[in-house]
Image 1 (tube, helix red, strand yellow):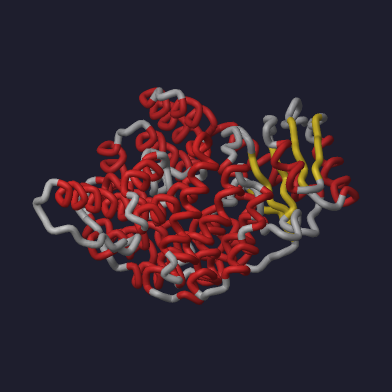
Image 2: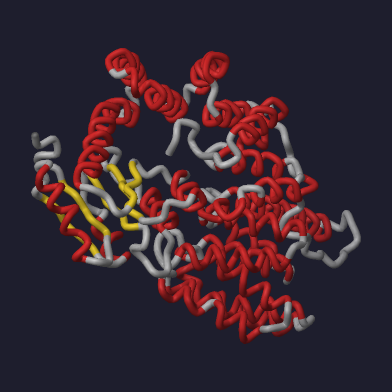
Length: 474
């Protein structure tokens, strides 16, 4: 009669009066520990605690979509036992599609009856409780025990077989047993295939360098279920790695409005737009990434650097500097000090004022000398790029060295790899010049990203590992 006895619940809703019916129903299910928050900052602070259920109203924030809030909650890595319910009066397929990829446990449509809410809560709670041992054993590295538990649960709870199989694949991949995961997937796709299985198999094939077969599985998944965004994401990354950035962008644009429900995807799209030379689309997507990420965990200084440099290219220096002001809401103090000088360095280089650029760079270097390791990855990248353009290859190598071993999104990693190659080449040429083996010549900065040189063999597999989402789900 009290299935949630002892449970803890968090309700995120701007309207406190709207919470009462839900709280009453939770009380009837045995929940006594119910907390509520009315703004985004409170929600993110509250998630440091452990809850059994988080209820999120889809209009919780005026500035942030429910999808971006869910995306940020996933970054927080809430405990595996926590269920996330979205409550909304929006029944449109487009809205639901933008939510689905962030995997809430349930969706409750307003107006709702107490009976409907109770049924959904109990059903989701029972499913989560039943499957939780697989996640816990997998996280502990007990692969054998996790697989045994999965087999046992499949027999006892046949209604959860699809979810259990997905967790088995996730467990194997998480614990580096890719061959076993691929074997199980190949067996299953013959019996009862699903796009997520085809995408999971494709990711494993990419890691092995089997790109043609991976491409085939991804296109099959995309044709079967166009709204399953993971197939589009993975295919776009594969195409971009093969130098087909224009086709990659077309694949992601094919998702329509729902494709912009992920800040991570929007960033990848504006990178692709930059490569194909669509500056207006690039700028629009950068602004969307900024709007949807807010000032929380999804916010990145990189977006502001990109936007500012676009204004620089247009000769709009004051607007470039103004566009950087919002980073004061979330960035490290040293990043705040760096961003305006970086804009002025780029503006000076664009105007052919190399001496002025050198002066600004020298003064900036002295100012941040002891705090360089605290710089954001984007600031280090832009400093390295500026140093290379000014013939300071060793300084460029130093700045890039701060970030080469960190984890980056797929497109930014491509930029870093390309810049690293440019720096290595410039250092080699300078060494040859100093040894008298070649005539001195002016070293020109190459494009940051040279998609024509993208490798599609074993090196690609290394680049994609850790970038593609885990096949078994996040």
